[in-house]
Amino acid sequence: MHKLGLPTLVLSAALTLAALPAAAQETGNVIFFHPDGTSVNAWGAARMYKVGPDGELNWDRLPSIGVYTGHMADRLTGTSHGGATVHAYGVKVVNDSFGLNGTEPITSASGADMSIAQEAMAAGKAVGLIQTGHIAEPGTAAFVASNESRRNTDEIAEAVIESGAQVILAGGERFLLPEGAEGRHGPGERTDGLNLIERAEELGYTVVYTRDELLAVDTETVDRLLGVFAHNHTFNDQERERNLIEGKPTYIETAPTIAEMSEVGLAILSRAEEGFFAVIEEEGTDNIANNMNAYGALQALVRADDAVGVVLDFVDANPDTLLVMAADSDAAGMQVVSGSLAEEGEAVAASTEGGGTLHGVQGSFGDVFMSAKDDQGVEHPFGIAWVGYNDVAGGILVRAAGLNSDMVRPLMDNTDVYKLMHVTLFGSDLLN
Image 1 (tube, rainbow, N blue to C red):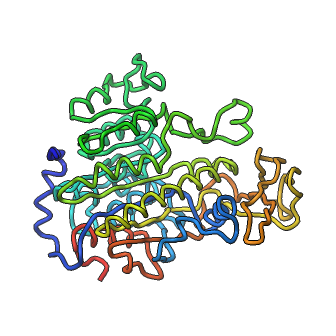
Image 2 (tube, rainbow, N blue to C red; image 1 turned 45 degrees about the vertical axis):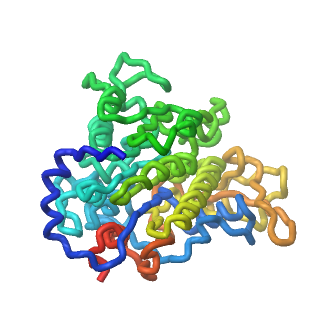
Image 3 (cartoon, rainbow, N blue to C red; image 1 turned 60 degrees about the vertical axis):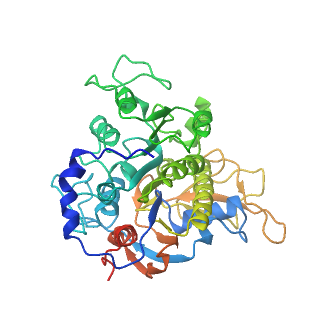
């Protein structure tokens, strides 16, 4: 396969690698799967909904488990951009950070003046950024872009395209095309006149826009792949009632699922002779839950778990690969409420007895959800209760499988996620 051209930032920092510790652990590929906003409660709801209370999710199959502690330098609850920055650099930063510590450059926990993804590229490894949100979403973009504000989406999108990542799959066509240019999904919104899709083609990317086009990619011959699957996100992250009124689905029908993106992306990345580092993110589990859209959040969780199955199958076939999973916060504090709820076909109340917001299939006063059957063949009615629209510091776990997954500790700080990935990619001793 063709060698990747490294961006100037990575080339200028590559000399830092010579000062890093010599390999001490078995090394291999790393897949960081970030189901944004998911807590133990969210996965419990997904289990009841998808496979029943006695069933087993793909997420349940991951053998290693540790409690995730994710405070920032200046607050207890993580943020999407601050949390992603910690995962990318392995050091605590203030909450309003995007590849920087606030507005200041970061030296990573390894001693390199770059993120783990940039360090991987400097070592000749392939990098993939795969997600369901728009291209500037921090869960993936902060691994290759640094900016003083997450709102500078045009600048962040340009940095992602110019990053050298071999596979980039996301939404966000609006941030890739200039004003006046009509794209496959809608009009461009850039005010600087740049056409980043044309730039990507100059850099050698094959560009695809739909699920069908993605699944038609020849993963044995395509070296660089850019997927642009929506004008903004590949989902409609507004309240369930608003989606129903406007006739909008939770996910855009023409866009691939995160499982389909993962399968194609990993097939390309796995051809890299020096190995690879992939960041995979289901963003709908966060954005949709933050809008207290219970139906949509459950759909997003099912999709995330389907992707876990795809990645686990890949790890089983490629034992030189680590899969590590973690969220950085608990989106809206999702909880299952059952017991005294109405029976099937009836509507949930507007709130729980204590006053928490309660939603059914259609939102407020919506029909109850029904679980998949338990071991006795019984389906159980339930509703979803929310803390509110904001993120909370809920019960989050680090889960892992494959190479070095036995290094997951009972208590895992957010900086330890970086350290585990770094140990596996480079054989460093950061976890010692």
